[in-house]
Image (tube, rainbow, N blue to C red):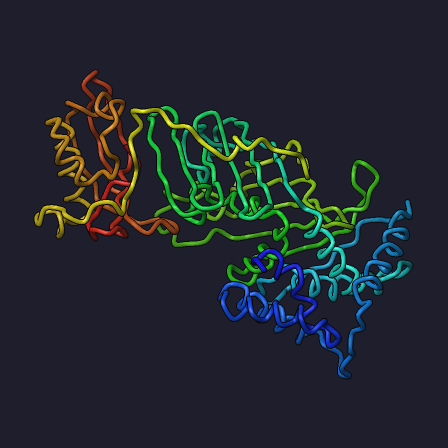
Length: 447
């Protein structure tokens, strides 16, 4: 059994009447897969939190009964007189999506009973729906808009920029595949590696699927676990999850899940404040289909002192469409440069003990001399792109400021002022970090 198949049957491991051969196959996988073992253990802990005082042995017809109740509840949810009702959830951490659905249902059902007039959504209702949703999901295609720069990383948001189109595709086969693209940048994952291409600078990077190429958009690539991911973040980051039951624009019942989150990190220097979702006080509003729990829409707002700014919004979400095989492959130009911060370990001895400010000075002065061999030590892109050389070659370093840290960035920002060869003066912050194989400060951005 693979991981996806095993996770679909987590609930069977809690059924005392589970088929012996199936139980042995599931347990055999858990013994060899730490990730599934951890997720199943988290689910069991969540179940313990809502376990009745008297043990209930589930019958072999458990799923049939669950889905029957789901259909009955779905029929009642067609009642036109429904109005929005809210409940605020403070939930323990857990990783398994079925556990998330179960614990949400426990709180959600209580809220409906107190509101009166409707049949409560029992834990097994939502549990059954989540299991059904995961079994039926084959692919998702999301068209959206994001307030950013088309060629910059997918983590960056800029409140004063226009919205730019962004598309996401995900296939839920084995192995899972995905693609995220704007007009200036594309990253594809064939299930084994993720391949990034920055179009204008013609720079590519190859890394494991979880390397972070798509930043905060990663949960949308795992749309079946969005609710679980948000509940886990609520525990880790202290965000507040609010659930409201509404009738959607198409007349179908929806769950409106709102997440109020505070900026993470230290903003003594506020350079990184509001530069990404996690670096901002933000509101994430998810519209989920009340029966399948599939995502129907998402809006993300950043709270500022003056106004709330919409920074991300889905335009269309399509499920179970067929994708061409070529969608998850990427043909790169022959002259592409490669970004790999872990590539080089044989650096000169004099580079090993430089401070962030010294690194910035050596790097910028090397650009001024067009000494690309020295630049290569501190800039992990090989070969140095021609666009880079044309932009920074021959420039003059005017001044450097005091390095500072901001937000969650693991390195340093070094203020600088330079005069380009064409006479243009540029002031910005060079980003340097030393979490690489060589253990030296390398330039990560800001140029």
